[in-house]
Amino acid sequence: MRPPMTQTEWKLAELAEEAGVSPRTVRYYVQRGLLPAPPFRGPDTVYGEEHLIRLKAIRVLQARFLPLDAIQVELQRLSLDELRKLAASEATPTPPAYDGPVVPRIIGDPPVPAPGVVSPKPTVMARYQRWELAPGLELHVSEGADAKVRALAERVRALIEEFQEREKP
Image 1 (cartoon, rainbow, N blue to C red):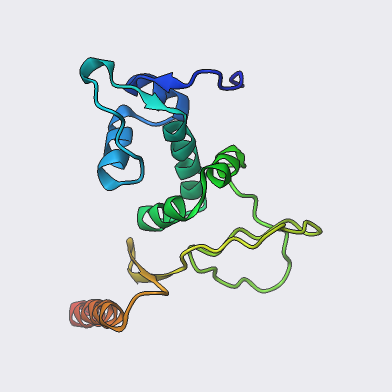
Image 2 (cartoon, one colour):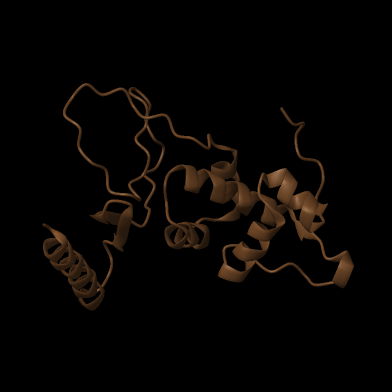
Protein backbone atom coordinates (compact mmCIF):
# COMPACT_ATOMS: atom_id res chain seq x y z
CA MET A 1 0.00 0.00 0.00
CA ARG A 2 1.24 3.47 -0.86
CA PRO A 3 1.99 6.05 1.81
CA PRO A 4 -0.48 8.93 2.08
CA MET A 5 -0.21 11.67 -0.53
CA THR A 6 2.10 14.51 0.56
CA GLN A 7 3.02 15.93 -2.83
CA THR A 8 0.91 18.79 -4.24
CA GLU A 9 2.26 19.05 -7.80
CA TRP A 10 3.07 16.36 -10.33
CA LYS A 11 4.51 16.16 -13.82
CA LEU A 12 2.22 14.31 -16.26
CA ALA A 13 3.94 10.92 -15.89
CA GLU A 14 4.01 11.21 -12.10
CA LEU A 15 0.33 12.12 -11.91
CA ALA A 16 -0.62 9.25 -14.21
CA GLU A 17 1.37 6.77 -12.14
CA GLU A 18 -0.09 8.05 -8.86
CA ALA A 19 -3.64 7.73 -10.24
CA GLY A 20 -3.05 4.36 -11.92
CA VAL A 21 -3.73 5.56 -15.48
CA SER A 22 -1.62 6.29 -18.52
CA PRO A 23 -0.41 9.78 -19.44
CA ARG A 24 -2.47 9.41 -22.62
CA THR A 25 -5.60 8.87 -20.50
CA VAL A 26 -4.88 12.04 -18.53
CA ARG A 27 -4.54 14.03 -21.77
CA TYR A 28 -7.78 12.50 -23.08
CA TYR A 29 -9.68 13.42 -19.91
CA VAL A 30 -8.43 17.00 -20.20
CA GLN A 31 -9.56 17.07 -23.83
CA ARG A 32 -13.02 15.70 -22.89
CA GLY A 33 -13.42 18.19 -20.06
CA LEU A 34 -13.30 15.61 -17.25
CA LEU A 35 -10.16 17.29 -15.92
CA PRO A 36 -9.32 20.99 -16.02
CA ALA A 37 -6.38 21.89 -18.25
CA PRO A 38 -3.22 22.47 -16.23
CA PRO A 39 -1.53 25.84 -16.42
CA PHE A 40 0.75 25.38 -19.44
CA ARG A 41 4.40 26.02 -18.75
CA GLY A 42 6.00 23.96 -21.50
CA PRO A 43 8.21 21.20 -20.12
CA ASP A 44 7.53 22.54 -16.61
CA THR A 45 3.75 21.96 -16.79
CA VAL A 46 2.48 20.53 -13.54
CA TYR A 47 -0.83 19.10 -12.35
CA GLY A 48 -2.28 19.79 -8.91
CA GLU A 49 -4.11 17.98 -6.16
CA GLU A 50 -7.51 18.57 -7.80
CA HIS A 51 -6.33 16.68 -10.89
CA LEU A 52 -5.35 13.68 -8.78
CA ILE A 53 -8.61 13.75 -6.81
CA ARG A 54 -10.65 13.92 -10.01
CA LEU A 55 -8.68 11.05 -11.58
CA LYS A 56 -9.28 8.87 -8.53
CA ALA A 57 -12.98 9.81 -8.49
CA ILE A 58 -13.23 8.88 -12.18
CA ARG A 59 -11.74 5.47 -11.40
CA VAL A 60 -14.34 4.89 -8.65
CA LEU A 61 -17.22 5.92 -10.93
CA GLN A 62 -15.89 3.71 -13.75
CA ALA A 63 -15.84 0.79 -11.31
CA ARG A 64 -19.55 1.50 -10.82
CA PHE A 65 -20.02 1.06 -14.58
CA LEU A 66 -20.87 4.67 -15.37
CA PRO A 67 -20.16 5.85 -18.92
CA LEU A 68 -17.86 8.87 -19.31
CA ASP A 69 -20.77 11.21 -20.10
CA ALA A 70 -22.42 10.34 -16.77
CA ILE A 71 -19.06 10.63 -14.99
CA GLN A 72 -18.63 14.11 -16.44
CA VAL A 73 -22.04 15.13 -15.05
CA GLU A 74 -21.08 13.79 -11.62
CA LEU A 75 -17.74 15.60 -11.64
CA GLN A 76 -19.49 18.88 -12.43
CA ARG A 77 -22.16 18.32 -9.78
CA LEU A 78 -19.91 17.41 -6.85
CA SER A 79 -17.88 19.85 -4.78
CA LEU A 80 -14.15 19.29 -4.29
CA ASP A 81 -14.79 17.91 -0.78
CA GLU A 82 -17.40 15.49 -2.14
CA LEU A 83 -14.99 14.44 -4.89
CA ARG A 84 -12.28 13.90 -2.25
CA LYS A 85 -14.62 11.55 -0.31
CA LEU A 86 -15.60 9.75 -3.51
CA ALA A 87 -11.96 9.34 -4.53
CA ALA A 88 -11.14 7.83 -1.13
CA SER A 89 -14.06 5.38 -1.28
CA GLU A 90 -13.86 1.78 -2.37
CA ALA A 91 -13.30 1.58 -6.12
CA THR A 92 -15.11 -1.70 -6.63
CA PRO A 93 -18.54 -1.79 -5.04
CA THR A 94 -19.50 -4.99 -3.27
CA PRO A 95 -22.92 -6.15 -4.37
CA PRO A 96 -25.33 -6.60 -1.46
CA ALA A 97 -26.32 -10.11 -0.40
CA TYR A 98 -29.76 -10.80 -1.87
CA ASP A 99 -31.73 -14.02 -2.14
CA GLY A 100 -34.77 -12.64 -4.02
CA PRO A 101 -35.40 -12.56 -7.75
CA VAL A 102 -32.77 -10.89 -9.93
CA VAL A 103 -33.93 -7.45 -11.05
CA PRO A 104 -31.75 -5.67 -13.62
CA ARG A 105 -30.36 -2.34 -12.41
CA ILE A 106 -30.36 0.71 -14.58
CA ILE A 107 -26.81 1.92 -15.12
CA GLY A 108 -26.33 5.04 -13.09
CA ASP A 109 -28.38 3.88 -10.11
CA PRO A 110 -26.59 4.85 -6.92
CA PRO A 111 -24.82 1.97 -5.19
CA VAL A 112 -26.96 -0.02 -2.80
CA PRO A 113 -25.72 0.30 0.80
CA ALA A 114 -24.90 -2.85 2.73
CA PRO A 115 -27.71 -4.20 4.93
CA GLY A 116 -28.02 -2.19 8.13
CA VAL A 117 -26.00 0.75 6.80
CA VAL A 118 -27.85 4.04 6.61
CA SER A 119 -26.65 6.35 3.87
CA PRO A 120 -26.25 9.90 5.22
CA LYS A 121 -27.66 11.52 2.09
CA PRO A 122 -28.97 9.95 -1.09
CA THR A 123 -26.72 10.35 -4.10
CA VAL A 124 -28.42 11.75 -7.17
CA MET A 125 -26.78 10.48 -10.31
CA ALA A 126 -27.69 10.62 -13.95
CA ARG A 127 -29.62 7.45 -14.72
CA TYR A 128 -29.21 5.54 -17.94
CA GLN A 129 -31.11 2.67 -19.45
CA ARG A 130 -28.93 -0.01 -21.02
CA TRP A 131 -30.34 -1.52 -24.19
CA GLU A 132 -28.65 -4.58 -25.63
CA LEU A 133 -29.15 -4.12 -29.35
CA ALA A 134 -27.25 -7.21 -30.43
CA PRO A 135 -24.67 -9.49 -28.85
CA GLY A 136 -21.74 -7.23 -28.02
CA LEU A 137 -23.61 -4.01 -28.91
CA GLU A 138 -25.21 -1.82 -26.27
CA LEU A 139 -26.88 1.57 -26.30
CA HIS A 140 -27.05 3.70 -23.16
CA VAL A 141 -29.94 6.16 -23.09
CA SER A 142 -30.25 8.81 -20.40
CA GLU A 143 -33.58 8.85 -18.61
CA GLY A 144 -33.44 12.63 -19.01
CA ALA A 145 -33.06 12.42 -22.79
CA ASP A 146 -35.56 14.49 -24.74
CA ALA A 147 -38.22 12.97 -27.00
CA LYS A 148 -36.16 13.40 -30.19
CA VAL A 149 -33.20 11.52 -28.73
CA ARG A 150 -35.45 8.73 -27.43
CA ALA A 151 -37.14 8.49 -30.85
CA LEU A 152 -33.72 8.22 -32.49
CA ALA A 153 -32.69 5.48 -30.06
CA GLU A 154 -35.93 3.60 -30.76
CA ARG A 155 -35.31 3.90 -34.50
CA VAL A 156 -31.78 2.49 -34.09
CA ARG A 157 -33.24 -0.41 -32.13
CA ALA A 158 -35.89 -1.01 -34.83
CA LEU A 159 -33.28 -0.93 -37.61
CA ILE A 160 -31.19 -3.55 -35.85
CA GLU A 161 -34.24 -5.75 -35.30
CA GLU A 162 -35.12 -5.43 -39.02
CA PHE A 163 -31.55 -6.35 -39.96
CA GLN A 164 -31.59 -9.38 -37.65
CA GLU A 165 -34.91 -10.55 -39.14
CA ARG A 166 -33.47 -10.36 -42.68
CA GLU A 167 -30.37 -12.30 -41.61
CA LYS A 168 -32.37 -15.25 -40.25
CA PRO A 169 -32.20 -18.36 -42.46
